[in-house]
Image (tube, rainbow, N blue to C red; front, side, top):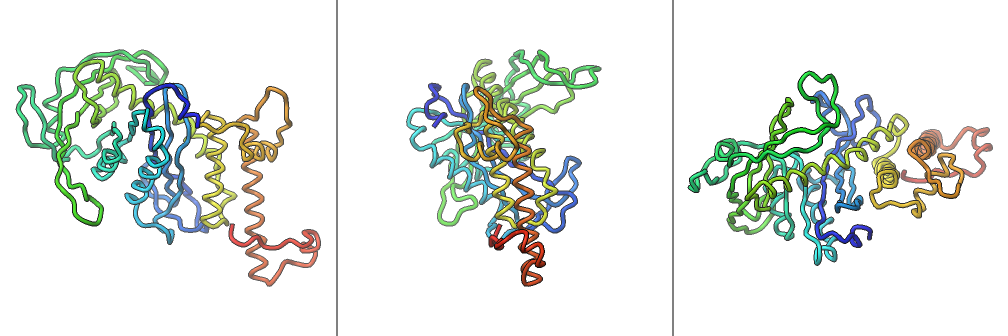
Length: 369
């Protein structure tokens, strides 16, 4: 609703494939191997989230938690396709008067992803991971040459230098800080050829798409240059800057992803089944959506209940904060955990001990959590 009312003509979609890590968990259902910050495999789950942004507003459009070990799992690319299609269908009315661009990190460097986006009449700005991807690129003399992304970087047009403000560590600085930095932007035209039925059943045809390779180099830092692929034309400094600014928007929503990972401390969730865990993570997103202006307002019954569980007293002109909503989520965790433990005990021992049963008067196992 909020995004639909936004006056801007552009809508940017940030897709994020976050891992929820449970390094010490053993009893949680359907754990799959995910990578920790040191690239080591630990138990956990994958989530797929899509946040929509216009320059003035933002909203959570899609969330799903999945595991390769769960019975309903097909494949990770299938989960991504499901997200792309679900979001696009939900935006059908908006697309009449708004241009949609997906801003994707290198986890989505996949021709099947771009193919679906283009079929949906949407645009893409994607960070590249596979520099050995076969493409045809235009050299500085205007000749088209077959090669790969790495070779295409030699054909990048002389860069435009722009200045922007980024949180970076430069020179001998000990820690990153927000500061002005020069950025070199360079681009060249590419052609990507692919089969339309990649990772799909049925007949396909070979198509060629004209796209652009954009290199972003943040000067004075130890960052590797970013290589971005986009179907938006990049013909001058202004259009290159626009692509850089769009991709940078990914950072503007990192606070909400960080909140979700920390607020789901998870230690209490060991005994829930996958449905219970999915419910909790979804409620975590409701809290994050409220705190970080992702289109969730205090009118939502879920936010009011989480606030009440967190001990919030209604106060004119004041809304609950991070600590209160975290506490509310924590109480919900504890209740669901208690129910799961009681259910497990009642199943194993044909009921609860008499004194506890009397204390809980008529409590029944709630079925699946």
